[in-house]
Image (cartoon, rainbow over all chains, first blue to last red; front, side, top):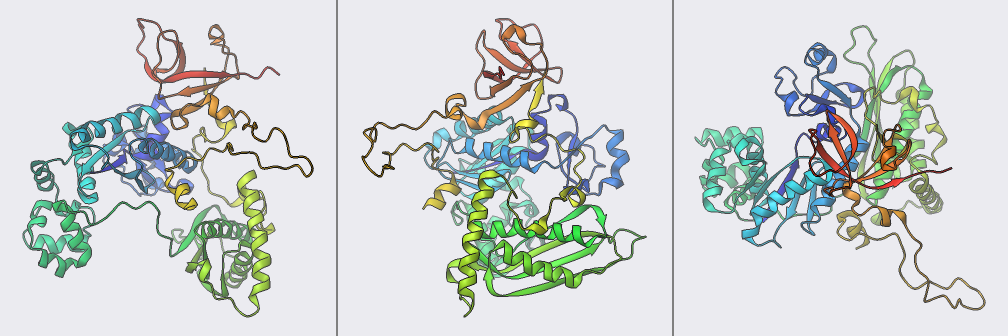
Length: 421
Length: 123
């Protein structure tokens, strides 16, 4: 069987592990730049007027009146806590698929059926004890059933965060409880189509003729339909597939007019995405650079533009990509505007091994590669961005995100350890 | 294969090298070749379970009676339930505290973890 283990309000839970004073209190985590609410714990969700993904300035009063504790996102901490959770899950199975930062599929085929319920409770208990993070556990024969079981485990209080589909009765109970629109993998459009047949629950959906499902929802819908019957169609996978597009764009901490600072940010982002590109063994054939002012402002003059640069030969070299991206940035930059954001995207991503080299590329490619490798090794050993393209500069504070309420990175930085007194 | 191991985390590679020492001598090969051992790694010795272990810094002199001084760093393992007389890392009234485990504890405490080691600088 397969378990889907999902952390409860993960970002907020990470913050609460190290803040015992916040037990039972509403906690929200804000997006980069403290712009929007991106996560809320149970207590904060119970305050109906704190909608997710709302700009903070619109609900500032409500947050304050209800003593909601706000954190800037501390992805360094969340990433470390996520690894602790995932590693703890690996004590239960050699096959764990990390589905997202707070969700994993765990293969329990090594556990006998009679043990599975016990194992599911033990997973919940051990992750909480080791890491302080509360999780819900759903178990079924297939990923789709595990996912629905997880939702059921969490939404219905009497399930105590664990639901195991180990009998036909339980499968029917689960499917009858789950509405069509809440089935994992049924999009909004398909949900409407399914509901038009008169089906209300996942159970009704599973009773539709397979021919209808295939015709109206393609083979992907059919797979889902089969999985709800308990037939495995989606196996656990360990390695994520190589990304087809890699990009990053973050709002500046302040509105920028100075070209030099925008250039620094742009070069910084290129270094990040190029690193990702190299780690998956790929090279990019196209770079997009875009630049925009704050479209929410009524007083600022507005300008936005983007440009796409095609490389002669796909590359993953930070130096080459930076050179080209900055050429693009110069082309679209206009003085006299207050810019909010610069971003870069890499396209035409292909495995580095099957590159077709241009006639004159060989020499440059080889030289660049050795240098890039040396830089990666140095940065890996001594810290991010210790060796960088000079354009990146060292004025990060002048353009980087504002994180006014970020908690200490108390699991990765010796100087930010929590204090006890 | 190496990549698979790295990403899946199924096999944890120790950073310590346990294989036979590759000769580095240009003249006589070392008589110690088959006796060399990896040097002690404090992470291995002091941290039993890295996934449940956290470090905490002591801010004042409140815990001198336990041999804990200001600025010491405590290694706290959440996986271990403290036994009698061991040092428990607890939360009481919303604050972290260190307490020696007594048989009957009157206060309302919640155990967060167990202090396993105290790191002291004596410089």
